[in-house]
Structure formats: structure tokens, C-alpha cells
Image (cartoon, rainbow, N blue to C red; front, side, top):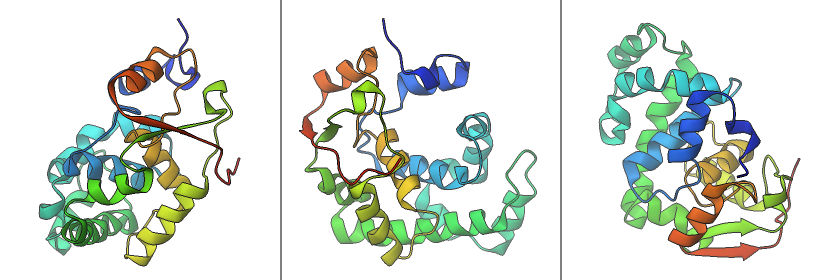
Amino acid sequence: MGYCGWASTDPLDKIYHDTEWGIPVHDDRHMFEHLTLECLQCGLSWSLMLKKRGIFRECFDNFDYEKIAAYNETNVERILNTEGMIRSPRKVNAIINNAQCYIKVSEEFGSFCDYIWAYSGEKTILYQGHDSGRIPVSNGLSDKISKDLKKRGFKYVGAITIYSHLQACGIINDHDKECPCRQKIIDEYPTVTKRRDKEVY
């Protein structure tokens, strides 16, 4: 049985790969958690994000974006002084800012999930060639969404970060060809196959 190489060693990576990565998300709180983890990761390793995920959930009210949007300086200090938390005021303030922007998008489109899934026609994208392991760090779709989110005021949402987010929340299925998770997602969710899209490596 094949497996995605990045998830075959570290136990936390394996659990995340098997139970979350690439599985379509249609819940706004869960979607915000994925987006926030990707934003927090900038400049750091994904393994560190998984190790600190419990701390992040404690600091950010389990990623309840409506509560986070109302945070003030007292909340920022609380978060920065939490043991084990990433002590980056810029990132913490960016998460609060993103929660406020997230609510505006949700109000405009009915939900943030409705907004972001519209980019793929409500289907998980299978890009030709990705299943053989040649996976980009960003592409035309992630660049397009990144630019729109930046116009809407979001921070830490570059094209590379957004590509990772699209993989994580199941808008793009980038599991390896021999990985059982790839076929499971194909079997259980609507998918569409597309050509490569302005990919950057």
C-alpha cells in the first residue's frame, strides 16, 4: 500500500494525514482553524504547528472566529504570555484581523465555505500530474484567491500559504497516486480533473 512520503514517519503527521489532510471541509469554524494554522506556520515547520495545536486552540477559543474578532489588547497579552505559544505579536494581531475579515466574507457569501468552494465549483480538484509527486508550492488558483483575500484585508495569506490551505481543506486533492486516502476522497466526494494551473515550484 502506498503512502504520501511526508506523512510516513512522524506520528502526528501520520494522524493528521489520515484523518484531516485533504478531506473536504464545509464547516466555517473548522475552515478558520485550517486557515489560521497555515498563517501561523509562515516561517516555521508544520510539525511544530501540530505539536502546538492544543495551545493554539486554548489561546484562540477553539478557533471561534466570532469571539476572536472581538479580542482586545488584554487578549493579545494573554495569548503572548501563554506557555508554549508562538510569541509573535504580528501573527496574533493578524489572526484577530483575519477573524474580522472572515466574518465580513461570511456575511457577504452566506458562509466562508461558500465563498472559497465557489472557486472550485464545489468540487475537489485533481490536477493532472500531481498524483505522481510533482506538486507545486503555489498555482494560478491559489494566487487568485490570495489576491482576493488580501483585497478583503486578510494578512499572511500569500499564494503559497493559500495553496497549502486548499490542500488541507480538501479543495485540492494532492495525495499520492498510491495513497489510499486519495481514492477514498475521490469515492466519497465530488471531484473534477483539471490541467496544471500556472504552477510554481
